[in-house]
Length: 210
Image (cartoon, rainbow, N blue to C red; front, side, top):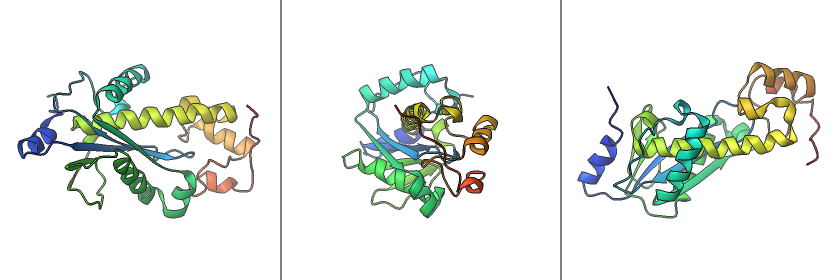
C-alpha cells in the first residue's frame, strides 16, 4: 500500500492553515562533521512523483529532486550544528539546535511545523511524526535538501582528507574510515565524543593543501 504523503498537510490545510514547514535532519550517526537540518515550506499544489525518504533515493534522483524542491518551494531554511556543538551538548540536543535554526532560516512565519520524530519546543504548533520522511511530503522534501547539503560538505572535506573515503561513506564509520583513523589519526572535524574517534584524540592527521 502506498503511503499518502499529503495526509498531514491536507488535514492542516482543511483547518485553514497555509504555511506548513516540514523538518528533517541528516548526519546524526557519522563520526565527522555537522548534523544538518532543513525546513521546507511547499505550495499547496506541489507534486513530485517518487519523492520519499532521501535514504531510499539514488544520489542522482536526490540531486534532481533537490533542484525541483529549491525551485518550487515557498521557503527553504538550512540549519547546522557542527562537531564542536555536538561534542559539547550531545548529538540529540545538537539536532534540535540545527532544526530550530532551519525553521528560523525560512525567514517566514509558519502556521504549523511537521517534524521527523523529534519533539521541538518552539513558538509554533508542531506535529512529530515517526518515520515522517516516508509519511509527509514536506518532511520528505526536507530530508532531500538536508541530505544533499550535507553530502556536498563531505565532498569538500574529502578534498582535504582523501584517506577517509568521505565521498563514499559520507562520514559514517565504515571499515575504511575507521582503518584510516587508526592509521592517520583524526581531523579537527571529527566528533571527539564518538567512538572510536574518542580513542584517537591525541593523534591528528595532516590536512592536504588545496
